[in-house]
Image 1: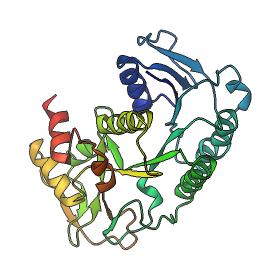
Image 2 (image 1 turned 120 degrees about the horizontal axis):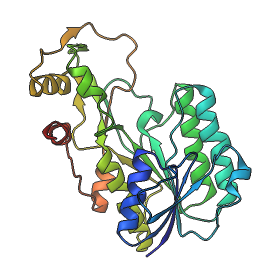
Image 3 (image 1 turned 120 degrees about the vertical axis):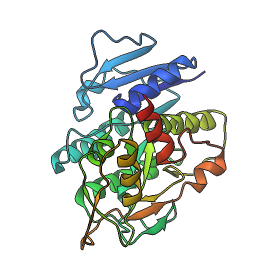
Length: 278
C-alpha cells in the first residue's frame, strides 16, 4: 500500500481519496476549508491554501504519489492564475521529486471543426484560461518525467446535472452540421485516476499524457434529444449554425483503453441513464 497526497479534495479528489483509503492506502487530502466533522476518518485532511506557500509547511514530504486535482473558484483569469500559476508553483516547490498525476482538461485543444483529437493532437488553446492550463501541463511534464497529465472532457455526475436540467427547458441547439461534445462521468474520473495510480505503483511504463473521455463523442443535438425524451420533455429547437463555435471536437480514448481501463459508463446513455434511474 502507498502513501498518497491528494491536493484538491472537491467532488473528484474527495471521492478518489475515499476510494483509495478503502483500498488500504494511506491518504492525506489538502483542501482550503475541509469539513471539521469529516465523516471519512480514514482520510487525513489538512487545511491549506496552495496559493499561499506558507500554508504548505505543515504537510509532510514522505508521499509516494501526489494527485493534483484542484478546481478554480470561478472562470476569472485571477482564479485560474491562483491555481495554475501560483498554486502549482508552490506545490511543485514543496514536492519536486514525488511522481504526480495532474488533472487537466480537453479544453487545451482549440480544434472546433469536429476533428478527432488524441494525446498526439496539437494542443494550442485560444482562450486565456485554457492557455494557463496548457502552460501548467508543460511545467508538470518538464519537472519530472514520471509525472502524468490526465485530460478530462466534460465531467457530469450526481452533482453536475447541467445538461439534464437544460434538456428539460426546450433549449435551442445546433442540429446541422453536427456539433460534437465529449463527456466523462465523475465515477470514471475517479476510476481513471485510481487505475493510473495502481499502474504506476505496480511499475508499469506509462505515457506522459492520457485523454480521458468516454467512448461516445456525440452531437449535442443527439444528446439533448435523448435526455429530453427520457424526461418526457419537448425536444430541443434547432438553431442556426454557430459562427464562432468552440470545443467542437471528438476525443479519442484509445491510449487509456489500451492500457486496460474499462469505463463504468461507456456512453452518455449509460451515465445519464443511471442518474435518471436514481
